[in-house]
Image (cartoon, rainbow, N blue to C red; front, side):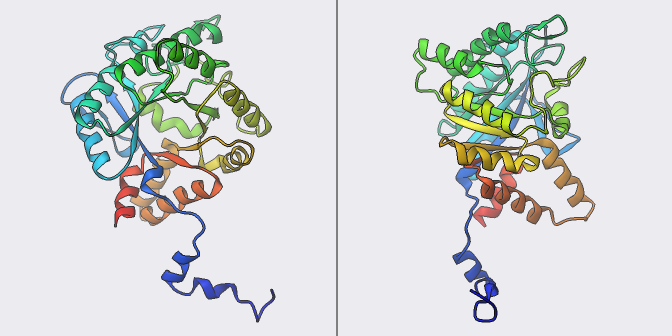
Length: 324
């Protein structure tokens, strides 16, 4: 096909033509909305670095969960801010912890909404790291015991999907084992399979009060330059019976999304993280970009790269645009 007989612009001429030949689509069913549940009552505190996103007490979380469901978004993922923190993050696996109570409240208010729970220790430990500290670093195998206990407590509270984000070796297998042993073999695991040690997480650490009190997380989260290692990490999770794979962050790692899509046949999740969200919001606020168009272009780009589902703080805004 050569010009002038073939003209690629023919199918771009009108909006109807463009829609007819469109290759990738963003749907309401693709969206997962993150929420931050805070201990206390009558709390609705906007996160300064994340306009439109709040730390909220359970009654407000339940109300927003209903709004999310009515917009057609099928799922939320929960992060907790407990009343107190300690070296072992005991609120994470307490039957009456902040997330366990939040899951029950959402299920009572909106039983049809799918509830995913983030399983990690960083929001609950006073040192801000993702597990048990020994000799100045996170002890992998001791942490697995706490993560398994946390996952089981979430399942008992009514969570629909367990999502471990800690990046400990072997955590998918440990969680699968404890869930199966306690009659929760039907609960899927959405693993943060490929989670990079990224500067894009800054606003989230404000939202979840989870900034490490010493050092950083580079000894357990992935090094950003690495690509082949991502395939090894995902392969381990497949072998350990993960039901979903995830890449976090998404925007700077679209090549990794494509790699996982081509190598594995499990549902693939992209996490459109806090820094990605905040950059769009800040630029739109200054009039430098069309915020809605950049948001939708970014989300469609993640779909085009291979994502089946997208965790995004833009979910409600995107849903309203998709609904027209």
